Length: 249
Image (cartoon, rainbow, N blue to C red; front, side, top):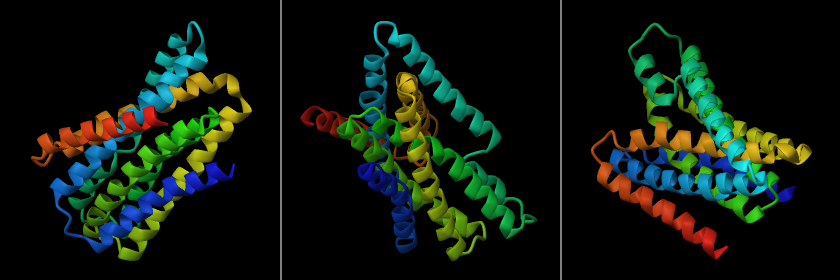
């Protein structure tokens, strides 16, 4: 339980760390952030496959592939629904910057709501990993999510400040979104601990959400500023780092 708590704080705290880096280095280039985010995407992709989807197949038994496939698509559909209801950060930045009549409070609420809702499934994925009982794999999954949170925390600072949110409120927002991931981690952990029968589905669901985030948000973002070649190799490096780590552990 202590390991789960420390990991939850680490996953949530990674966003805050990224935000602090964003405050200190406000002039971070798109190329650098794209490379870092692509590396994190590779890590998350490997963690989703090796740490969530393959274990889901193992725990599911003979016909477990059916549960795994369903779980992957349900996870993806859930995030797709969230995207329709609450646009992600970059969409809010574009719309918010063109509407000067919005109050600062409404801007804060929009940003916090969007980031928090999108971060919750990532926290659940980390918690589900621990619910499987394989601490090594769970740490790999959590590490991948934490790596993704650092560059995300870095890149949200500039747009929020540009949208008129004060530095103090911007940092509070970053802390709140990190807290959401901590809560999500415990939700995932206790859900599969209490009802182990749902473990195969929960693992696949978490894997599906992570793959969706990589494909729908991270890869397009890293290929939007002319650094797609470097971003692609960074993704491959991140994937291979997690692959080797999984083999060695």
